[in-house]
Image 1 (cartoon, rainbow, N blue to C red):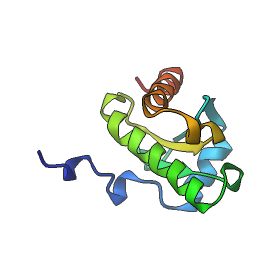
Image 2 (cartoon, rainbow, N blue to C red):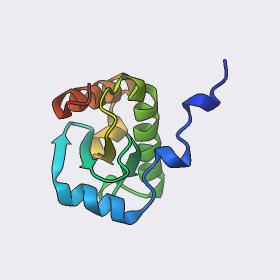
Image 3 (cartoon, rainbow, N blue to C red):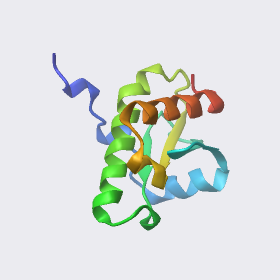
Image 4 (spheres, one colour):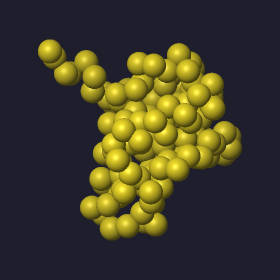
Length: 118
């Protein structure tokens, strides 16, 4: 089985700080135990992903681990999202570092339901 089709290519990721700023300015947020899901509507929105892990999560190792967990969780579940005209920013919370893998996915799906993505 080829895995390259499941990767998040550059055009599937939010890379410009202006898009992150627009996302936070729109204030469409849904908070869960392990993450906060932010939605961005507007020009160019196409179910792209942005990931944020602030210093409150811990040192660089902890922040990078949290970002990897968020990206992988999104990557595995993005096919279930029906709404394609929004961008998503996931912000990691401290609890993500101590949460078992299946519960992180459940948290993302619960937030996606609240946000109307499913």
